Length: 183
Image 1: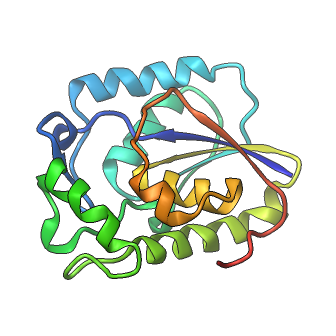
Image 2: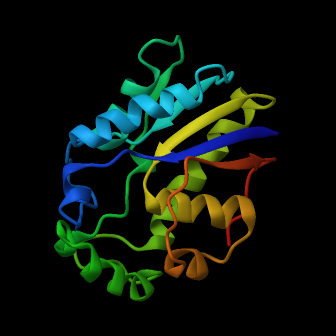
Image 3: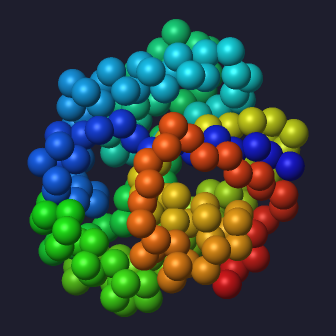
């Protein structure tokens, strides 16, 4: 069993502008930088074997700022990226939110579907089983990352996870026992 602590990346400049970034590489805002430091404080004494984050700077900078003073490997992995919104990238969040239910299996134009996001997150979870069994890791990701974790590790149908109202919290805890079966 692997304990996974999941946290969303800290507030980005696009978040403050209420834009849906998707794969756009937007930086953290000053508020986001402070939030990242607070994340590190919350987990200062927690044994964490590794921190996985997406390769988008809002995710990896959250990890770097949170754990700069700890000897914890920070592993960037593109499979943890937000959904690729294609032509909807950097559009108002409300516009993208309205598209979510339609994009479960049908990709955003010039982008990807949530089924595709879930598949890439699953492939990373598969690789974590052997090296991290019996340990705690952290994943710093995006909303789509959380949808996939809810689906694979809590058995929530992906179509429900994608449309559920997002409620930020300081962290979510998941248990990975074996490799999730594809749906």
